[in-house]
Image 1: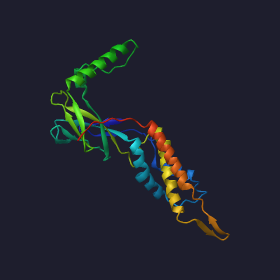
Image 2: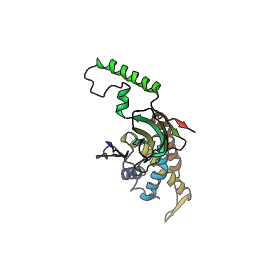
Image 3: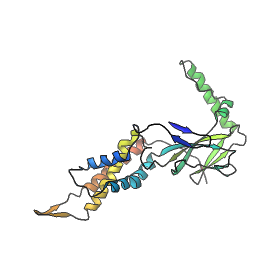
Image 4: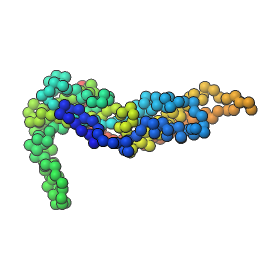
Length: 255
């Protein structure tokens, strides 16, 4: 559950471990796939963690970023850059990628005819509710009570709302994932783990390419150096999959 306070700071509350990816679990997954402990690995847990944070996570975010939300009060100086221009500052110090939507308070939505949220108790209500939603959307669109654009700087947004009755706005934006992977849902766990596995395989493959054989009392043994190409195949297949199922985000940027 996400909870926002009056100052515009939002946080997740409650135990979400059962739905999110875990850094340690990902490390153990990679080691098992590579045959540890039967097979000795040339990398430590810390090395794998660095691969996860500084390679795998950066690539994954290009396809499936996390989504954050804050509240901006147009009468407060906290988020204001200058008139109509506001900072979009993530409360967890995550990098902001793109502003996705700017929504006014419920009072403004009601003023334009948006039906009050209530349980739909029978199907006969649906046509009327959909019609009222469409009419209120058109009223807001042509009334132009709220217009917004993302600045060329990712974490700034222009909000033009001088004739708006709303004083606070809910800003939805894409952002980087948490370094502990807790923001990655189980829906994408397999895909992310495969990316991390692929990068680790490629790293070990690069290490093994530095020496073609290893000396033993029985003579030199040729090292299997196919790990790099195998990792690259896994990475390519996973990227192709993510490219097909990645969430679609839209944004408006003003230069």
